[in-house]
Image 1 (cartoon, rainbow, N blue to C red):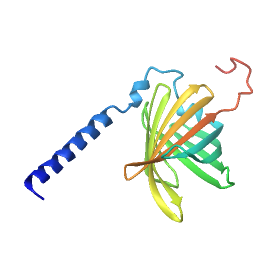
Image 2 (image 1 turned 180 degrees about the vertical axis):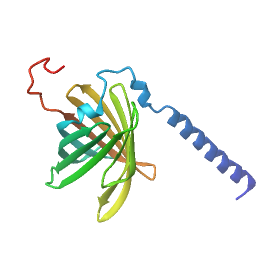
Image 3 (image 1 turned 60 degrees about the vertical axis):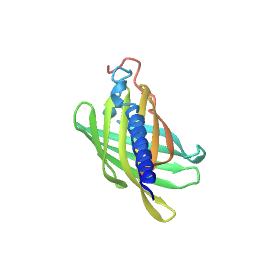
Image 4 (image 1 turned 30 degrees about the vertical axis):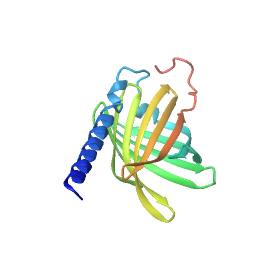
Length: 192
C-alpha cells in the first residue's frame, strides 16, 4: 500500500466517523417530550391488568412474529413488579417478570431473568425511553440483543411502543406493541 493509499484510507475513516457523529446528534431525545400530555406515570399505567398486542419485523420490514401479552403490575412505593405472559401466533409461550425501581422523578431501572445487567429508562411528558440487553434464544444459541424501546402514552388507557433491536450495532429489526388497560368499573369521576 502506497503512502497515498494509506492517506486516502485514513480520510475515508475520518469522513465515516464524522458522518456517524453528525447523524447520532440528530437522534430524538426523550426530553423533547417534556411538555407532551397525557403525562406518563409508569406506576399508574402498569398497576393492575394490562393487555398488549404486538409484532416483530425483520430488518427489511417483514412481519416475522405476532403475539399477545397479558400483564399484571403492582407497585409498593417506588418499586414495582410487572408479570408478562406472552402467547405467540405459533403457540409458543414465554414469561418475563420485570422488577422496576423509580430512581427519581424521571429515571427508572429494571431487571428481569432474561435481561443482561440492568435496564434503564427515562420518562418525560408522555414518553418513556427504555434501554436494555435481552438474552434471546435463536436457533439453539443465546444472542444478547440490545433493545431501545420508545413508549408513548396516547390516552389514559392506551400506550404504543416501538423498539429497535440491534446486535453488534447492526439493526436486526423492530418490535411494535400496543398496550391497553381495561375500562374501570368505577363511575365517571369517582375516586379522583
